[in-house]
Image (cartoon, rainbow, N blue to C red; front, top):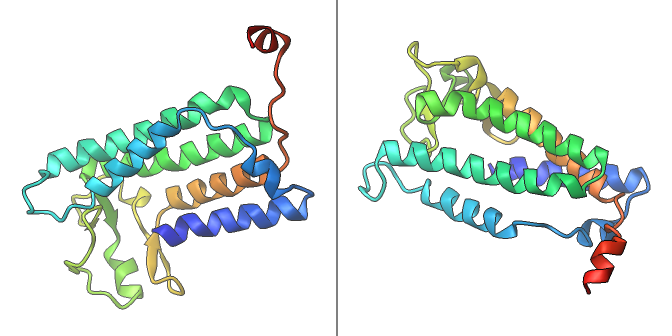
Length: 193
């Protein structure tokens, strides 16, 4: 899945440069609540504990996944007031993608993967090598159309509509931040110094 995060960042960087943005502006952006992103990353690592290891039950993994989604969402939302309209649009699109993914992960406990998509990649539909975040979809899968249904053969992965929306939002955000100047200090903030 890291390829699906690196790709949009690279696309965003390319789009930012092609439209006159600069990497320096991206690096100058102050992030508020960065500790929330660190906490979410730790939570994400914990959700990769193999099933049956007894460290986390399936229910605990489901709740931890929901908490990771919520924590990242909160971190993005607290930064909204300080961002340009294009950057806020990128965040809104990314949150919409995450919401689409959460809509199928939460009722199913894992992201369902369409057996036909696995077959298209040459994997057995009953493949037990799926990571703890994924499960093979069945007729009982809820909101299966929002699951991983789109095979991407050159990356050997299956992605969801939510992943596409999320990746689009990440690319938009990166490109927008390359155009945004560092927020200027207001007279009230200068008076406090």
